Image (cartoon, rainbow, N blue to C red):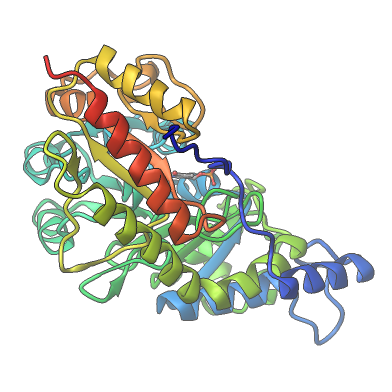
Length: 397
Ligand SMILES: *Cc1c(COP(=O)(O)O)cnc(C)c1O
């Protein structure tokens, strides 16, 4: 029997829902793409999206912006991070996180990662007195023990900004991701949980902070047109002192996102069917370590990770190459050269060097794959059969 081959691309999204296409066409027909370009009595798609996203997360306020990276930097500006100030963040995250910190003159201080791919809370506790801010990245959708994290933050006076690029729609003990810290930041870039090409969202309950974020995002003194925003009085205190750092969302992208937000719970259920099937397909392989998913975590299984402890770099590369030859595209966090969306902390050379032995060891054997919704459960079974077969072919040394 010849080897099975998987033939779908790992980077293909589903088409946008027809409702999103119809709404986008409507916006293009009337031409009012700028969020503040509204007729009397009209809210605009962006302002309506903000109301709906605030409802979705249970936050008092929401702001839509140009990208997830912009949301993170805007949050740091809104808490008035000073130039040269240190910001604690995960060593295992995506480049836009340390990038956002650097973009506002902050200095990332990297915190270790555990084998379950979450921030190492012992290392966080040890480093907590070095900074007043933690930018917590729920990288690849893995949520740490948020009760313990918030207790550490409380003891050390840390302000927590959550990077929820991979946890939009996830929760810890029923509290939505992004709602534990002071601010939650989300991305609507194509490879996240809603797709507007580029885009970001910020939520918080803090009125002063959100007034500052709205002014920062480039509101041209049109903040009264926001709907998920603090009362106008908050802006009066801030409007002369807050710089305009334009990074607004436009009505076209918001029009595309609103129907997707309505569909998100159903999409999450579909992702998790794929995730659990992959997990079952790769269970009981002695040399492959799955990532534990705690009871308290409601996750969104939009990507899948496993580790190959005991594998040398050459063995991992050989295994990934054989999988790729059969159409299964795996990413490796052990590569020293940053490639595509995968990079590791050593390649962010603008970040002060840190000794991170645990992160090094975890990333060296960490394999990652996307689970796009263009895959169906049968696809997942085929992918897991291929991974199994190629793993069993890897010689034991
Ligand atoms: C995608 C991503 C972001 C934000 O990315 P943008 O491309 O700027 O929207 C932030 N953090 C993580 C972990 C991400 O994967």
